[in-house]
Image (cartoon, rainbow, N blue to C red; front, side, top):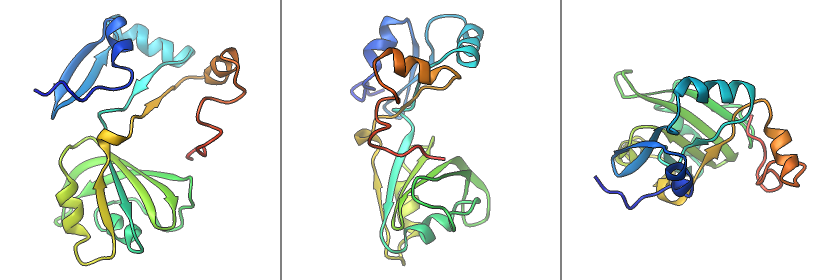
Length: 174
């Protein structure tokens, strides 16, 4: 167990009594120290925090980036525009499922792949070995959290912002 990879929200999780497990050197918060049904209800009726720091993130770039992803992704990336995201399964050469996750398109030749399985950089790299595409493991570089719930806009306004933080810089991924 390596506890040196910590989310920017780690101190907040600890202060709120989070139960955390460590997997592949990354913290995964199980719940925030209260009844999980209470947390579920808070997200359904208010706003929650979903810390995705430990979700594995890969950046795929180059002229053949889309093709390299498409070789192992069951949903299509063809026709997606920058700012769009697709969810689907990732499969090996025989079609057996390896993981599920999201593919975010930022440009014609730049994508982020977010999955749960650690150490798939070689797998992605082997898939693209004959293509003009590069795969970089970016998990440690990219913190990520989501604020699910129907009252996100109200919380942003209460903090003095008309939009959630970062919305001025990054497009909403649809």
